[in-house]
Image 1 (cartoon, rainbow, N blue to C red):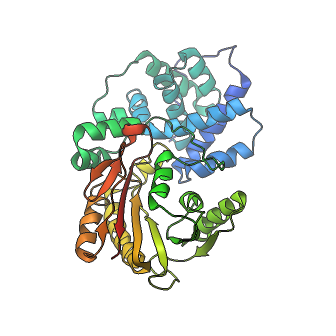
Image 2: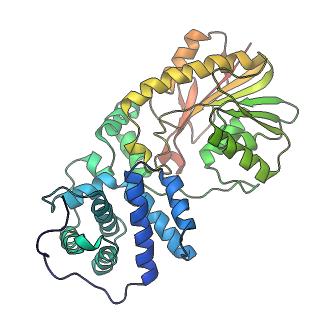
Image 3: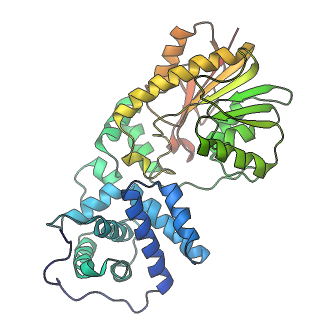
Length: 390
């Protein structure tokens, strides 16, 4: 069904002061939102589309803000819009309405500018309809949200799961923090990496002369940070291995060997590494600020499958650690199943491993490891556990 009404609901708003570059930026953003709705990943589609257009640095940043912000706040934007819609929406029209609602409610763009510029990039058949709906959205701000999950723009299950796992207040603060765009943190070597990940790499404690295995290394941030040691950095998929190789070459590191391998069956001799890092595949519920579409992809059932994978990877990782060596397990999530649940399983499955002192503040002790909540220092949310083999 077409989204355009049979009659135009009123004159289309135009704003003579709107910059054409801004309108083009909104057009690129609308294309990206439609591609994401069709299954593309935000971190891949945004650079791809930006490479195809000629926008200023300012407008390229505006595109990124619009796409990432609208994707994060998708549920809230849909609620703002759907109060004034009585028909099924085509995906391209839905994308433009979300874009307009995000500017109005979350960027506080002046209504005349947000509406007119957004209408200009709407499908021609639906411009009158988009104009009418966004005018109504603008006139109904600030909203009275129906529930916290809608206001924070997360699936219900994520809100419930984190409230149960880390407490209602901590979960609300974490979810709110993960709606704030991440800051860019650059290492001394120029590699852009969140401070939480840098701290995990430092916690491994690798030094020159040691052999270190990074079993799930892509994109290579932690492996390259440990490069004073010899690092065997492996991952299972071609494109992920390619990311590691690219970063190793760019940083001109001779001490990092990149290997394509399944971390559950690593091609190394047992007990041949001084330190092993398993930065395991996880639900990613601690990094939702930088992965805006992940909240709409992950499901509760995924966590159960991931826990099985994490255990299999840990069995392989333990076997690689030499006597007296160190194993570090980390995940960028906040669920109990993937943090203290794994710690409890390790205590039973590998009882001879002894815990290392956990990182200090802003990390907080959790089981034998430590957790870093997003709101503690404005970083990603992480869990880390260090163990020594006797």
